[in-house]
Length: 107
Image (cartoon, rainbow, N blue to C red):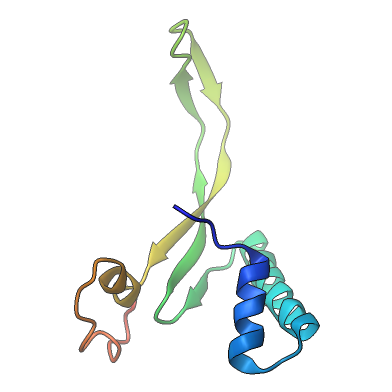
């Protein structure tokens, strides 16, 4: 399994859009910074046809150390959640995406 890097995405933008390499990298960084800043504020980011990023609050709970069995408190925290759209899900599973592109709910 390979990992897609920011540099690879910027290079793809460069080859597809026609911006300079520097402009492509700047565009990618701007988009990623915008998404991150919205998530930091607790907002939901929806990319139509791709999916939805959101922040969910997890409450305090009691966990257990698997080695010792001792109960340990787990403090409340925020977790990042990604929910792929039906279109993305269908593409990943190699299914037909006909009719999905026109649906307004792409959660």
